[in-house]
Image 1 (cartoon, rainbow, N blue to C red):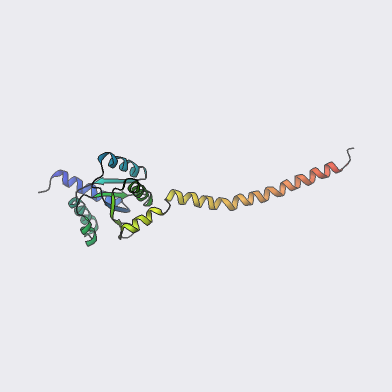
Image 2: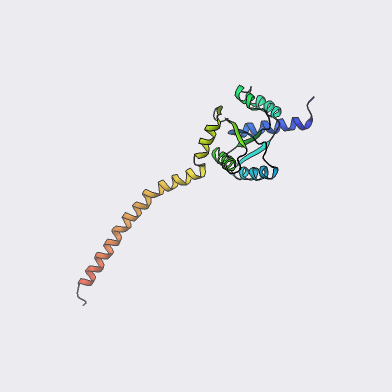
Length: 179
């Protein structure tokens, strides 16, 4: 009979799976607790969540929410596994994880599961490629900059005509003899 603690953990994981757009499974063995805490903070700042859970509890939660566990996921769920849940921006938490991994050489990404809009498995190479993409905030600022450029040029061109008119009027005024 499952303990109340395990039932609560499965319910919590199921909730995270239903809200998450992406989950990254990673091997955190050898990562000291203080670095795990630092990584959690970095990922939390990006709108994600990094947690360690028992593989069997994750399997149960995944099967409960997704009606079955893909074979590749089952094969990867061996040994110590940490789970990164990306809720809002899928890219920012991945960037934080990969940057941290490059700096500390841990944790190692095992597999990713893109949950929304449709389920798709991601290899370690694909996860690294996603980390190279700009975040939603970066894309928004690029879009705003792109939209702002033509407007700024139009304002500059239109104000240039007014400046020329002022210079012409000033030249006419200076050319006329004072009465």
